[in-house]
Length: 590
Ligand SMILES: [Fe+2]
Image (tube, rainbow, N blue to C red; front, side, top):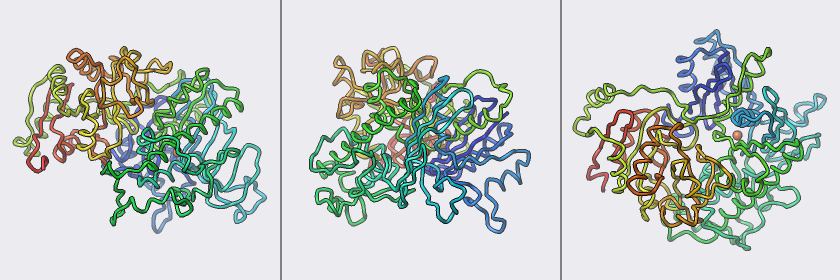
């Protein structure tokens, strides 16, 4: 039984689960080359054309017939596509179960027998409340899922036990396990602060990167109400589903009009001298307050389910500072954070959940815990492909190709060259784990500024590192973790090594790390090992192989385009033992 699920939302994605096993996960932006591309037609068709598909599950955040409808027939575009081109495929709508999709992705990925799933995101599916058939539809109010707790049991139980909704208007509606109000909730408040800082609402990662520069500031008003854990509506203006704003007209201290130039650009994003304490302290406060609220939700999940296994998903799961904090606060719990916890990942949960629901005879044996994020399409790049690509595209004068070894590439990095690496299947989710990465020397004191400039990122944003797994506990406070292969935690550099890796050490002494074992990724492990031999430092500076604002590189063609469009010069293909160089032109250096 092969189930393909797609997510038409702002993280358009597709995943195939074949007989209960996750085979492939792709985001539309990697294929279409448009950041956060919404409708996963390319991803869906690619899977349809490469695998047998029995059932298509359409995820999203609403009931789909009224969305994506075609002119004339009014038919949903995905249904029409399947009817015309893949008529044997059965179609199921999963649009009303966004949080359940997150919960299933986290639960099945964890490998636990049972767990409580805590889902926290900007907003999930829209539900019309109250849930009472006797209330006419025009007397109901639209609310959006924002925080949920599910009780999960292998193989097919993902039951909602508590849910909190948000909305722009509407009354409190009392239903047994629902908490409904036109309220600002955790992630909406984070989005409002991100907007106020001049980022997009889904660029919360930038706010998180700024937070460690700040400190407690009594001049900032309270953001949340202690009793209800809801955002204070004196501070926040909700604009569900898209975003929320801070009502800075009420608070002189939060007036940020002078931070913006005539083109609407925030001055301090590019010019560090223009940042003010209030920016840094506001980022600190939203980080601090929301991670405390998350701890209260974790306690609630334990109380309501009696579980010690807690799985977390939804966009807030990408908060690597908070993820490390839970480990400190709850050493007695087994907390698993879903690495594909953004909306794209709901397809994995939905495909698995539907598979197990359909498997009435329980023929699927064995769980399929997530054991790799190298889930992208299998591209075949051999010597002939590369040679042919250079010839066909007439790049003989632009691209220099030489034979190389891990030792030579390690030396190149030690000599403070930026080297991109490209091999194997691409990584799922918003991170690079050594297959589509840009690598650099973590010991360079100017490394952060240098690479931020080359990538076109803001000056304050930190970088991650990939460390040989066996050295992780010597270099970082692992907070009881044996490994962190998916870069889900920001961990403190150990006292013994503090100061040795300034390019990847954030202002608070932490680094978001990926532990790498030989089993996880042999070519990447071998390269880091050579760097260790050469320098005594068992880790590499690792950032995603893309330029600021671009999707991650997916294909060899994308890689070459990225080198040509930037100051990046080197591309290492370890499986071929090849180093490609695209020398910078005067314009690049310009
Ligand atoms: Fe979500």
